[in-house]
Image (tube, rainbow, N blue to C red; front, top):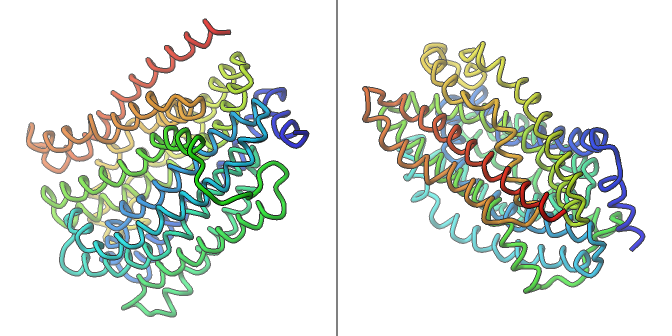
Length: 452
């Protein structure tokens, strides 16, 4: 019990701003490095192999989110349960979390490996990929699917560290794995040669994720004071809560897969392969710029979960305001250069300057609401942290399916927008969901105030 008390002390008693920095800085650094995985795959493949291979990596990316969805479903759900258990000083629940996680993640990963390898081609056809792009993407994605167990166990156990409040340790382990990936990318691309360079990038990712898994397991076996691996088995009571809370977090990943699949397909239909390349580069920039905001949300989760579990609602409100303001400031760091120099930003991925110039105006549209993304992401994280799965799911579904899907289908047909409607659909969706998030947050704080 003393170890749990030590873990919660800073979260429930430390100065809000200083605690926010101690949680967020390592989380942001760690998540930025995580974002380098796919980002650097695309950069190295685009520069060392060619635009066709880069497009193959990008059309494959939505389906790598199947693994991220599993890791997030179990990992984020378990982290939420853990943070609240630490707040309540519930050692029995803490001791059962990790064994349950390992069992669930392993089971789901085996299913993904089998189904993913068998249906790789059929999945990629859904993006509109064809010809050489399709063939290269099949080779790349099959290898990625084969490493699903490493990816999912490594990422989900890292989420447990963050839920424990060990953001610095989680960052160091994740950063070491990602740096290894960055080193291996050009090395393996060169070893495999230009013709098979895309395979080198895939193997670099799998090897680095296997190292992440090994380091995470070593931490929980030898180093962690609070969370240890006990019996590896399914725990019905914990699993129900984990899956309930984790479902909304998983939706963000899985719906991203569906959303990006539709985007690529629609861009191909209205603009051809050039616009698929532009969209691939734009989504790479968007994914990377999201990473610091996800990092802040990782620090936000244990702060909210632990204080909510301890019924310290005033601190929950203070943390929410501080984190949301900070996330908006961080968003400006990416927002300003992308809005001022969109063509140059796209040129990091696209060697053809004419294609980069053509896509520049639509990159601005895609990033139109980015300045508000910190508030939006933290709103979803807030409801996950306090165990309110319904509200979190509403926001995730609204952003990535309910509003987005009809808009991306309809807008290209209106006002001669054509392929531009694909990019406008994302902007309009984000603005509507931001409004919903603000309303749900206001209702949640009103209820907390009544119960305090």
